[in-house]
Length: 159
Image: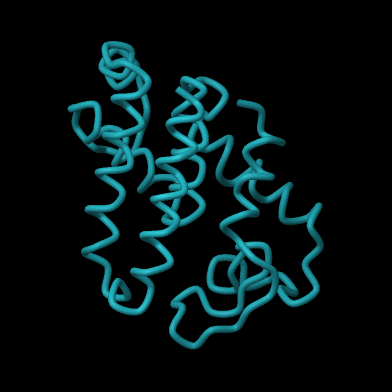
């Protein structure tokens, strides 16, 4: 999957400007939060600026270009929602290796042994399990569950 296609999909999950007091990220635009990017003028963030941030800080950091197409969007979306290192750690759990957050040859060999549909299901299972343990699960669970449901549909489409 190309970055541009994944970015368009991602925007289906990430909306425009919001400032929800229940969201620990605080002020957010295009899914980019003030908490993560305190130096940015979030309210006036342009789409192209968000796209550049997503490519640099999420897509590249999870080595999305090196993943099977069906897993690419899943890991990219996970990274955006929970951080790149967290996404990699849970992918490592999904493939059954030590979850140190650093993708290397051992992780890659384990990933290569699994089918793409199995990887998608395992990553989404790990992600949902992770999300249920977050302190803001009671407030955000409906939206997150819908996000996972949409990603299951994408996974079926992609594999």
